Length: 309
Image 1: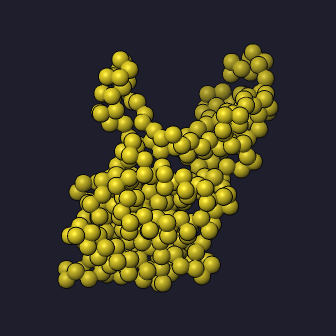
Image 2: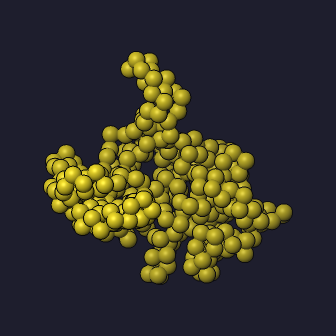
Image 3: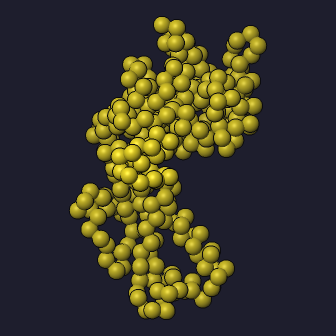
């Protein structure tokens, strides 16, 4: 309102929230608020406000008390929410800038017409492999991403996941994969698997399911996706008291528990119900359900062998 009254001209709003299509989402929220407060401002907004979209790719583990103490000891001030992060960063920006755009590209930002392919690469390759490690790793006795990626079996599994997901990403992936391994191996980024494992019912549908659906549409193997879901089912059964799911914990645990019968076998129909909770299309594929059942057995055997070796 102050900008309109001052005749200051058009502006671009560029959100940086970790949300797909954040520009459109933020525009909707703001315009709803304007409609409640001063509807007369809407016409001016629609002519003078551009809504950019951005994506940030950078690993930032949850702040710990040790991080707070480190800042206080080394910097001399108290920060209640310091952020420990990695050297790697990627900032991708799309949108119009009617009053001019800062030269963010000169310091490494990617300026593009469409952020979506970069969002997909991050969601499917970084976040998808993070979720795979988050559910497989604790079964193997691993605590952090660096611990998990150091295990030869888990490392081979995320490479297989990258083979699958990378097939359906429209921006380059070879260098990105190489960088991902370096990022995951970074000993200074203590990224807890239990942190990543929370809210699997919300994360797997956007991190794992899309690549699985595309593979099935192509008649290709979706084994790495089936493995991630199988590991989630095993994780929910073993670690439900420690974390499991936060948003829908009771529901997903109640679905996962019947996947194992009293005599130690796997109930395929119960597994189908878990998959349907994530995606009904995948659950309608008998071959995919069978693959998840097989992977529950395979991941369980591999984890047991690792923990008893």
